Image 1 (cartoon, rainbow, N blue to C red):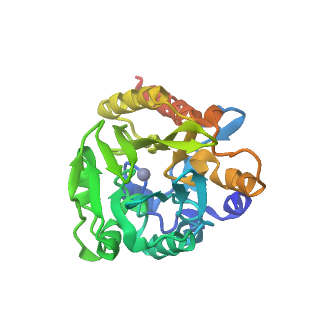
Image 2 (tube, protein in one colour):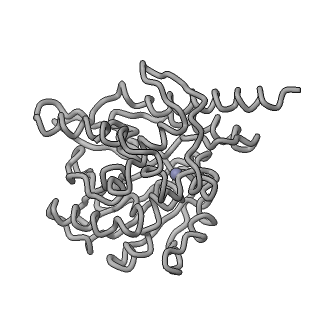
Length: 305
Ligand SMILES: [Zn+2]
């Protein structure tokens, strides 16, 4: 998949792309720049390569990745490149991220394939207010009647998201540190702003082999091409915040952020659970923070007299 993504012409990758950037309309017209470049743990990244890695092709964005159990009651039900997580409890399910509206049928199919009923989704949560993660909220609400909860700081951006003219449903507004509980599972909402104002990192715990593991559903930490002083403050706060969270299992809003495809391949081979990988917990923060500083340095260089 990664090789295929690499071989695709950029016009194919970015052609129909609206989203996941600070300046969404600008992005729809042109891919982000191929500079600055940063190297983290031996791999080199540019803003353009990161976005290509995250999004893949249009087919990747709407095609279901094989649904699978990550750990305990936490499952992947997203597409090849857009994450959607199902947390199954005796009282129904929690879904994190509806993704694009056009990808909702793929998610529904994955939920069914795992043996759950889509209509048993009781709570719909979001990662951040960009269309590739939350555009499908209204449709999921229609199909399931789930209670939709959103971080206060993301509410204005969500309200502006109206696929086919549908109002974005918001049943409960959350704040930093709020807990969401269903059927014995509790998720904690951590405000980690920058990528969007209400970017939400979710944490919970999971059991395996008699041990408890900390699971972190990371929010995007990807900086935009232009950093304002307000954004600099938000990102600095968020990089610090995510590093302070306990983590054994790192997940993210795009599978590429946690090497989902490679880990899934290992999972199929059996052996120890590859998703339990504390060493990789800060990898995405390391990449994005390095990029943030490189963008900032470029920006300061450009404005120097
Ligand atoms: Zn985004």
